[in-house]
Image (cartoon, rainbow, N blue to C red):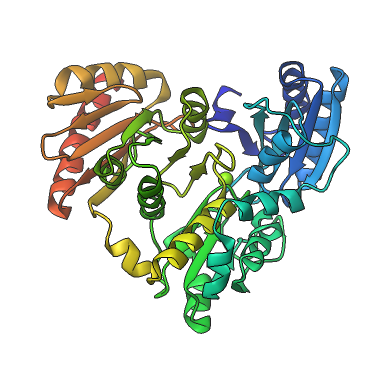
Length: 429
Ligand code: MG
């Protein structure tokens, strides 16, 4: 059961790894910690109503009042907990995982500025209002931008098109019917499964394309040419805009993030607050240190003035604001950002020897800067770096690396990969 707990709650194949009993027990123990008034939300998966009922039973059994907020994105539930003045919430979702999966994300009320009316149950409207209020909606409306949206049959379909309409955009959609079997594409938005969105951008002449993961806390963007931008490109673009308005600000991000983020933040006199990999770690660092902006390389951007959690629709509104404000195509804006060559890889390693392998590696490697906040990160004088991180859910080490050029980054990965493989072998023998 331990490995069900990843970086963001519990997840597994429904009715096999993730059982009704497990969810009931989890909800009961969460209920005693979260507090009296607890919200439940769910995504559009086939098994979500089943686990909603199991979670409600668990909460009721320990004396909680259950506020069932229906089908909605994870960031909308997080917003609702704050807006309705509740003590916490449980989101039934497996985020971007395949349709046979389900899970529970636990939402603690990190902020105590409780306002609002607990009897109000329509949270979609206030949520959309809040997102729209964070950007210069008059400016965006005046530009008449066109946006192509692919919610991937997930819960983003309930809010993202509404936010875009409110911002005066021409809105085109694909995979915008809520369907828990995710018939349109896999729930994780990736360059290789966004062909329909790319076609839609081209066919409609849209200024921006955007795709969401299953619970709409992450968003991936396409420029007006239909080119998919990696998550750290959109994150860096928003970070640069944010720093322009808040020179010297601190930005929270995980040790796996690109130097492009460092460049735009430090270039504006700001500083990075580094965290372990995982959205919960970044969010917590923001709340605990009074930091108003953070994000991850996977398309999770956290805009504190709205809410210090990942939010795909908020991110979309921020990108629309930047394109409207600068009056330039998205491809041009992204081309202005610093660019690095990146590589990812993995090395198999049994879970039980991961720590010993890491300790041995630490003794073997030499780099001017070695960081051990999360795995092992080696940083070299030219800015190149490689991060070796034990996966929380699989028997592997994940490798992330970045350098100025493609040959450099490939050399960095191949050399270290060999070293890790040798070390794993020496402990497995
Ligand atoms: Mg997600």
